[in-house]
Image 1 (spheres, chains in turn purple, green):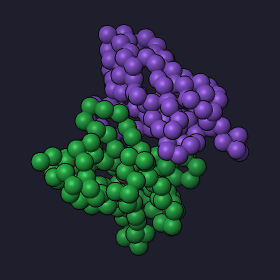
Image 2 (cartoon, chains in turn red, green; image 1 turned 90 degrees about the vertical axis):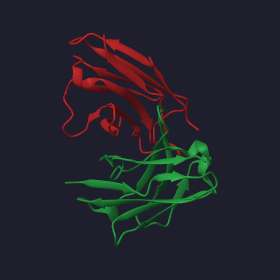
Image 3 (tube, helix red, strand yellow; image 1 turned 60 degrees about the horizontal axis):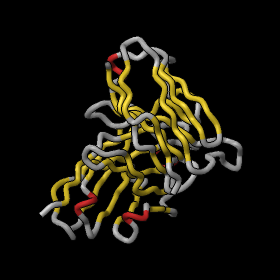
Amino acid sequence: DVVMAQSPLSLPVTLGQPASISCRSSQSLVNSDGSTDLHWFQQRPGQSPRRLIYKVSNRDSGVPDKFSGSGSGTDFTLKISRVEAEDVGVYYCMQGTHWPHTFGQGTKLEIK
Amino acid sequence: EVQLVESGGGLVQPGGSLRLSCAASGFTFSSYWMHWVRQAPGKGLVWVSRINDDGTYTTNADSVKGRFTISRDNAKNTLYLQMNSLRAEDTAVYYCASFGTSWLLSYWGQGTLVTVSS
């Protein structure tokens, strides 16, 4: 199985400050058509996961532009430009290129 | 409005069976692959099973192979997960999800809790 390694696993952030989460995959996530199925999800406490970013860098509908994704191959990053209280939760990267699809361990973002 | 509503969770003894359902509305259910993802209490997300749009192709995670069966009824816009030989480690919230064509969409249900305990 493709292992998705996130860091850090805990991320205390001051309100208004930026945050960054890294995700590395054990295999390339590039498909034969050149696309890359690396996605980012947010899970707020007590809620279902919500996808923020699909295919590395595309924001889902309704996702504020403070969220951005980047990367290629096996190294990917999610950035939040200015953390707000509503951003508290766990963030997961996920690969949809290989079966079984796999998630990272999750990064818990909290307000410092 | 897109809705995925899971049902069928509950308390079951080890070795028992349970059938989860996921009722879909607000999108063209029969056009998309469907998935089950689970989350043990306090843990991360794990893919369980997936099925193609017409129900002719399915794949399961190794941890549930031979025990869980995913299926769908496109006439009823409903996804199922038949879970047999349940173990304590199957205790989790089970989410159904759809990601459209080529991951361009993302729909999740609210989840249903399955507890396997004597």
